[in-house]
Length: 294
Ligand code: SF4
Image: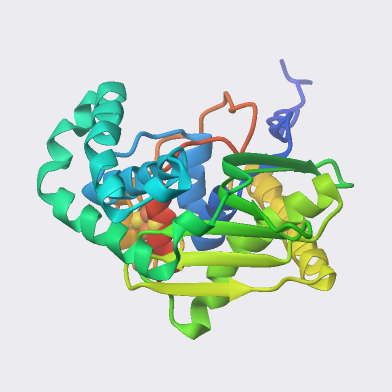
């Protein structure tokens, strides 16, 4: 044994990057806000308890989607109120653990729906699509994916992307962050259909404001560069297994404080089995609303 040499232990193989390179605006927002939150949601796929705020957002979105099933004259505040109970029953049937979360919020949701009617008259609108899934492959191979609340097409062919928010409009200095999601959708439409949407419209039912933006090609090219850079940062974090916490106001809503180092916790080991896609994890949109209003 005297001639035995000590060989260096072989380095552990670096994990491969995901097979499908895809990104949604919600998950992009997670990574921008806190890389560790992105990891908990997308890589670890940790469950998050339903919250009254999330249920409220889901129901209001469902009512506004189905309001347009009615013939135009029937799209009234009374009709919207009458859709709340059946939408609630449908949601509770799918997810019985939500059963206790409705009750006292019914009045608040009716109030939000009334506020929607102060912002526009749905009897004068015929959406081209509701809850539209958009996908587009960028030249790099990265796939963009997301759901648009409503897409309107004017008689002249101009496209308007509409998104409902149950929160309040952000202060001016945070508008860019709120618009990132909308530019992401606009980029996906442009790259998949070859047309730059004429208008992006965010409707804040929490305080009755509308934020509108008229994108140009240069905006969407800049968004494309940002999305690509973001994806590279996600891949780097994944390969290096380096998901840093970035504490901020989002922590108030974060379901993972107990295992977050920023709060004295210890995250579990990073799982070896990855989801096929790093885009598809269902997290209530209202969590994104919370981020957007920070
Ligand atoms: S508690 Fe805050 S810092 Fe920790 S993972 Fe959640 S959002 Fe990130």
